[in-house]
Length: 390
Ligand code: B12
Ligand code: SF4
Ligand code: SF4
Image (cartoon, rainbow, N blue to C red):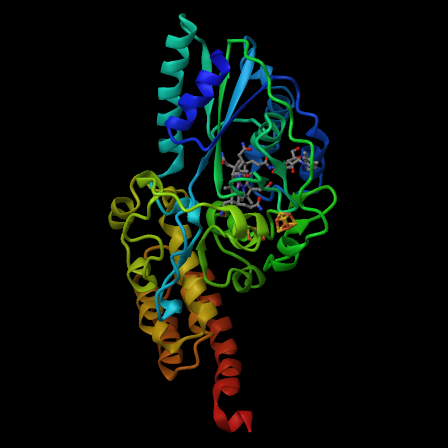
């Protein structure tokens, strides 16, 4: 049967899961509307416009001749790669970004799958291919194609594979028999992800993530300065966040480490050294992260996050890296966040670096950060001093 042959080919191409669904409107559209009306999309305006809503409401608005949708999931789990010691000098990066940029990897696999579909169907098959690249509610389509359920952390979870998966779709003008939707909810009474989320970004009913609080959004999508409260919430994450998946029992029990070279960590990943990261020029950044998902944060965003992670460590060994960034980084946001971070290190050198920068800095926003950091430094200093503690 054609559908079975296509699924077998998808598995051979490195997709762990493949299901088929119709292009009918998604039944979980109200949850998306609720997410938007609460402002939970934060600054992602591309999720909220009228055209964006219309297209997500009806996949046929994207491709009127669509007869069926192949929904695929690729497993990117690579096993554990603990942070090397001293851990604070390394940035923590979400697993999905350790290897090659999945948009490139999965699009290539989709194209190879389409070549097979056309040969097997014996005719040209019109198609549209997506992997996080179009206005589709991908997880809802995956659940409807039988790939798994949407967990309380809003991830698509499969009982055999877990949730370390990335989704992709091929819309076809070829009729294929749809799979049964996955109706069960295997989360049961578990609340581990809700309890572990460092920023309480997961809202339970209906299942939604408040992007304004989510570390993944803040480190990857948010441009410009972060508020002081948000900076503290990032901990040591410099790109994305995996906490709500790390704690999920379905990943603990069933995630199978994969030897897929496309998703294997490429240097300087999985845990790049914070010092060298904070010193990257624009050309060095472009060259280090060419073909990597990290380039989405852009140089300014990634270096801002690294400065924040070093500030959150409060470690004095971070001072020389932060001092250099405050003195000479061309990006105002990076300099401002480096100043904030220095305000959280108790060494005298942190204070001297802030005072010296106050003399030479010309940008008002950075000067404000320096003043605030000097004020904060006094408090950090007192709480770090043994005399003050007595
Ligand atoms: C915007 C976006 C984000 C935003 C918002 C995330 C969110 N949860 O809404 C931010 C930047 C925070 C983000 C973070 C991440 N993302 Co993202 N993101 C997207 C994107 C582009 C759109 C998601 C969306 O439409 N959100 C709006 C909400 C309302 O829709 P939804 O999440 O699909 O939720 C639906 C269900 O919850 C459903 N629903 C609600 N209640 C119920 C109840 C039942 C019973 C059922 C069946 C359904 C249901 O209704 C909603 C739709 O109406 C998709 C790609 C795509 N086009 O779908 C990737 C995508 C969801 N992201 C992905 C990944 C990998 C991540 C991260 C893990 C990356 C990281 N490590 O940092 C984190 C995970 C954070 C999290 N817990 O969600 C993968 C998820 C793969 C998977 N196995 O689920 C996707 C599918 C990209 C891809 N092609 O693989 N992401
Ligand atoms: S990705 Fe991190 S911050 Fe976002 S919902 Fe999951 S645990 Fe919370
Ligand atoms: S941690 Fe528990 S509640 Fe959260 S998604 Fe996994 S099984 Fe569901």
